Each structure stands twice: as C-alpha cells, then as structure tokens.
Image (tube, rainbow, N blue to C red; front, side, top):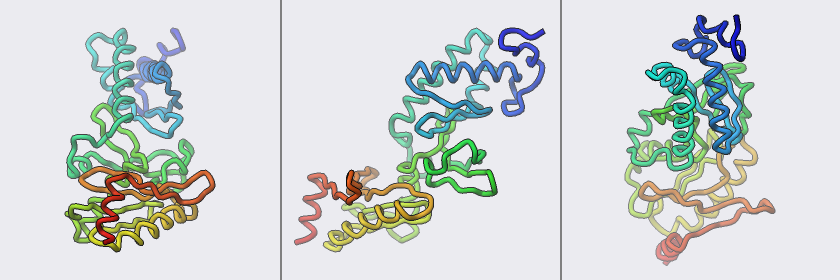
Length: 260
C-alpha cells in the first residue's frame, strides 16, 4: 500500500541514481532540497542526481543523500540535514571557492563531469564540451559537501597559472600579467615588464570583446589584471557595445611608471 506521495511502495527498491538509498527516500530528499533552496531565495530545477539553479550553477546530490542515509536519527533529521547542507553550499559558492587553496590543491579538486545536454543551456557554460551527441562535459569543483560546476571566471583563474608555466613565466614578476579568455579555445596573456603593456592593453581589450561575440563557447568579454593571486577587471563592454577601459588607481600608476 502506498503512503504519502506514493513513496512507501518504493522503499524496498534502490534508487538507480542514488543506489545507497531507496526510490522513495530519494524522492523525499529531492523534495526537501527544492524546499531548502526556495527558503534561501533560490529556485532550482531538480534532476535525479543534481539540481540546477536559475544562474546555471549545478549541485550534486550524492554526498547529501549519503549524509541523510547514514544519519543515526533517521528520516526525522533529514529536514535539518538538508537545510544545513544547502545553507553551507550557498555560502561557499557566494564567495571565493578557491580561498585558502594552493594551485596544486585547486587542480587536485577539479574534475570533468558529464551531464545530459538537454538539461543545460550551453551558453551559460562556455567551457562545456559536447563529447558525444547529447552529452556535455563540464569542469566541476569538489567543495567537500558537494560538487559544483565552475563559473567562467573560475575557469580563467584555474588555467592561467598553468599556461604561464608552459610559457616559461611561472613567476611573472612584480607587475603580474594581463589576461583574457574570451572563448573556450582562445587565451591571450601579456606578462607586464615594460611600456609595451600600454598598446597591448588596448589590443587585448578589443580582442576579448570581439572574440566573445563571435567565437564558439564564449567565456568572458573582459580583460583582467592578475597579480599575486588577485584578479581585477581592466575592460568591460558598455551598454552601447563599446569597449570601456577600467583602471584602478594602482594600475594607472603602474602604467604611467612603465610608460616613462
């Protein structure tokens, strides 16, 4: 006999996507997850083993389902477990997910994950690759409590140090670098050493904006200044579509110093 929501009839059948709990338990956890996100002002679309919010961020359900299934208090504790888990996720992705981690640690916690193409808008994730018809590969990051897809800006931060090392500039110097990744197959880097940075800045800003609009897999139309692990936006596209250069006082002083 089926109980509330018809779940009792499935409490002896393992869920195909979360096999350590039953079909009925998986349904209840998914419902709690949807509610918990809504209570935190975030609407999500629920799939069998993950959820996706309206900003395109993806959160896996595997670790949460495992935590619920192993809680000694049983299902009465699930609302509390799910609520705390969701609050922790939103706090983590709302800040710097790489905070306190070295480049080696970040790369060790970054994985490729496959998802059905019909569950995503590819335009929201420029780094997504269709590895076979109907199947997309994303870069995902292990947050311990869950796995989330990387944002375009996170992808830029992840790949730049590796690119610099391959170029022989693993230590770019005191002034840092200008960098842009307008699309998934395009990267430009200028190591700041002398006055050549001034024309390069203008050229790279236009390059980023142009390729972002025209190339497949757009990531970011902006140019960035990277130094000592910190990123600052150097260019952006204005409401009229024109490229705008945005200089902090510090970068302006540096450019003036090098241009002498």
